[in-house]
Length: 237
Image 1 (cartoon, helix red, strand yellow):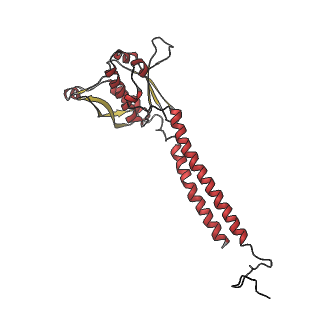
Image 2 (spheres, rainbow, N blue to C red):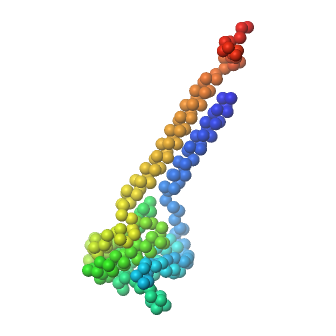
Image 3 (cartoon, rainbow, N blue to C red):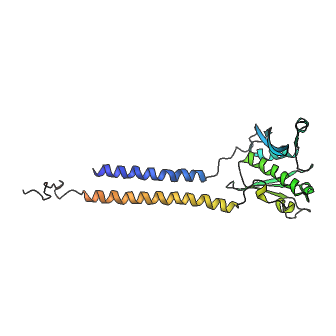
């Protein structure tokens, strides 16, 4: 009987700890494509048609740099056929991608663009639409919701400007997350720690129960368990 209780307790502890393992796995950084891998897969860029933001499919080559290639494709604007169909872009001609950065935990993806983007200054509506195109395209390909956009400094070595501040556009208007990457990380970490505490607490509780059950059924001296009569008294020898 003691073995049965111990096995039951062990199985219960495993079942409690399984969700912890699953939660921990979800917190890990997703595997990255092999360096140097180049593929061509359908992707999407965002253009406007009849005033509505619309996803347009494009073949994007790039492998682990697909976001960069998608943005370069976006900055080309609509093709002649797309223009004829009514598609348009609010991103100024000549905007170039300078570089991109991504946080190690993939909580934020940032792009740095050339200063042609600031040609939109003074037109808040066009600025919001252009930044939305960039944000949504980067989200579509990267799978990261928090997108940062900066503009290159005026002179070499100058600090880049935040494009949202420079153009007077609120981030929430473009669909990028308003919370900071640190807040997002803390939220996910809190859930993980909750699962761990629940699992450890459950395992300890089951272990204590198993210990007392085993101790309560300890054999009487002589190697044979004591027996009792129906009245609760030990039988006379």
